[in-house]
Length: 614
Picture 1 (tube, rainbow, N blue to C red):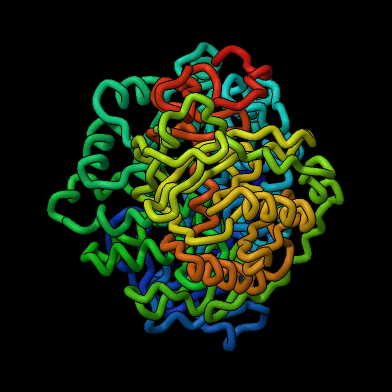
Picture 2 (cartoon, rainbow, N blue to C red; picture 1 turned 30 degrees about the vertical axis):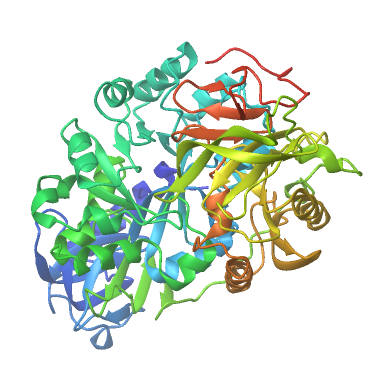
């Protein structure tokens, strides 16, 4: 767990830093001959960096301090000749669970690529394990700094989902004052209740930023959200959205995720986006291990910015100095300056963004993209065995009755995937066989279900979705966002049932089935969200699982993680929980059938767990 005050120099360390800067003591490390990113001006400086212990003591002209070989002592030297020296990168918004890696494995993967700090909202862990899960997702012995964005509410909307764990409001507010906290995490943009307003006020009083999930809002809807003190947004997907928010004072954390890569549209017209460039930083948000391994972490964002013509000095500042300043971390990290942590990287080619050396806390921790440390984190036993389903599942659990269908047809509310995880509502006419609504493979309108996996009851909500393109079989996951229930989409009910049964047997993860066989499998036994295996193995399992799913007709590059967000009911237009189909704008239930009542999902179980909105 990264507590900010623990990263400041102690009094003894400050005394030594001053002595090294004054020249009366030798540094422990000298980074020589590089072009150093200026902490305060947009320049590349011909400077050596003197490091004492964990921190930077001084930036001196090249050769100002004699070579260590000429002196007695143990000063280490790094030759940065021909390299640019920059701080390690900051990911301004991430859910570690969605990398499908434990914190230690994420550290082993990302630190070697230059990302040394992540600001993480552990909302998945909160839903599965409660507050202790949130703490566990902030903890690693690897040299990855993890700061907390406090998950605002668990479950997110008790009147719309039963969810898993329940975290009391006083715990949420208390965590805003913790030293590990930088933000209040992303909340429901359509929630105007007293509890959410109180949370916003508490965050402001604690001096914390408030992370926004603006979900393509504009004008009054956006204004009402930002008026709560929300100060950043990682949903901006167009230059117009960026400019609208920056003109209202927001910081834009450009998302480059497995869901969608917003670096492409936002940097596509530099002249248009130019007024906002110094109000931008970067986040991976929801990026799984395979994409992190093959594409990169925040290094990917910097490469993209430079590829589209952003000046490299500014591109690197977007990944370091700008987020550090905004999230009030700049007294600790994010810039190469006296008394700051010696978290830095040597970059041989600015456009390639592949560090030859990474230093964290004054210690060399990676070379040429390979970590020099092991992940030795031990996970408690309670982090496994979290998928709870009845021993026998009812084959009728996915049935959608249509007793009043005329002529063997009925109309349903459905959603079409676009821009990654956004969902456009539409109506579809589907066949009814033996009184039950069928999917339409030709039109790519498939049944989707969210199944409770926390309480052992398999409570199930149903919808229909377009975009997955399956010609047969089903895919299922134990990571419906944010309540971490099971989400399953399939060509027929039998395949969907098979997929859910496989998830129970493997105690969490992703699975693709067809013709009665498992054709793709990613085992994620840690909370049904993560694997403690080496990241290389998890990435390879994802690659194989994606390939197997694509072979069934699915055109989505990362189908499992997209399926995670079909149920998300705070993103327009529709969502699904274990209690039913939800209109995102009204935050209320609607029936799958058209016309139909708007207070239930069309199943017999009703909504006995509903409560008041907050």
